[in-house]
Image 1 (tube, one colour):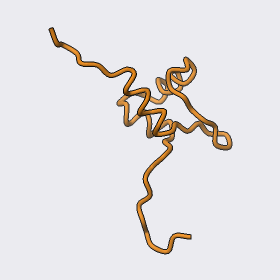
Image 2 (cartoon, one colour):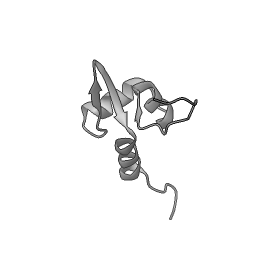
Image 3 (spheres, one colour):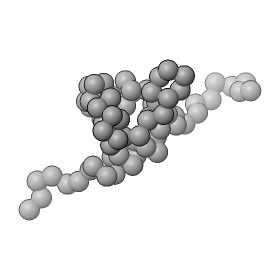
Image 4 (cartoon, one colour):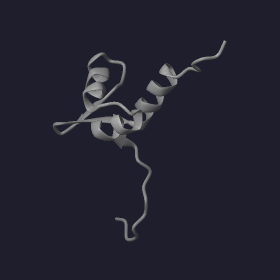
Length: 68
């Protein structure tokens, strides 16, 4: 049990938080999950995106734009 107000590292994100991080709408996050481009887990009835999954998605989709 935590007795102090410690800040734990965030290991999972809600769809809303993921959308905010990616700067897209929530519907886009649902589409990415549906297309299996972003892995999600169900916690009770809610989708959660793990930090590991989000990091992997960003690594696989990021690239430099505009370089010649």
